[in-house]
Length: 328
Image (cartoon, rainbow, N blue to C red; front, side, top):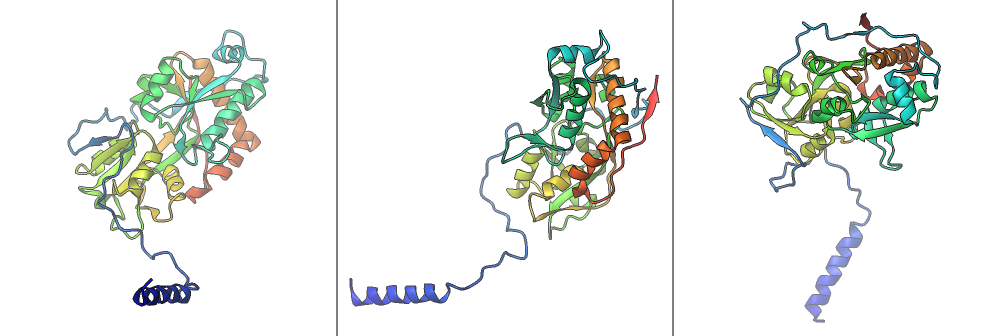
């Protein structure tokens, strides 16, 4: 080794030693956007301005929030004969369509692999009411766009998956009374210039395929490009890859995404309300009445409050069960 090389190595070692106690701190602003090409989520659809969307169904001309009146709740294991509940009991399990990427409503625990969340716990309470066992349940992962078809074809008994009650959906399925009311908002990068819907003009905004969020956003910001993905978790990945400028959906879902990334936050006022209901096939009125009875019982016993406090504290605002209205 030459004298010059030895001298260079000595200088490097001294520099390393001198900086060995330097403390490195996180940057004060989000990481810079990258221009590298990154993979896109499976099934992603880009709906440019002017692209036709499903029928708009926000109007309440169908009295969408009125559900069937509850029945007296039978004892677990003693379901009335010739009812959907008796069929479920005979089948040995309740089959429920859920999501795995909608923290805090339904997501897969990274340590145990179990499904957890607000919707998951509600589904377990319905299982408890039928079997006296919250675990006699089979969860089937169901995309937002496939929820109605899964009910119509009998793939699932219920859909408990942040499913908004709309007049359009009531043409094909029935709903329980609302079990949660959400406000649609916007998720953006901290220090970005996006602070309200007005800033989404000509921007790329992520929504889940089949979600009502897209319809409202199209009306409010016609020039936005909507990037549709299979799950809200895919929207988070796109945000982190700089593939979209914002995400817009219900506040609790956005709060769950923000909790997973310190550079994201919710901005702007509510763009509109969404009432979540448990989806049920149209020819199963007895099951609708039974589920409504379970919801009433959960409120009376304080169990609904306990579940809400456990999972929905990320929203920040006090959570209250919407007052039910019944028909028939």
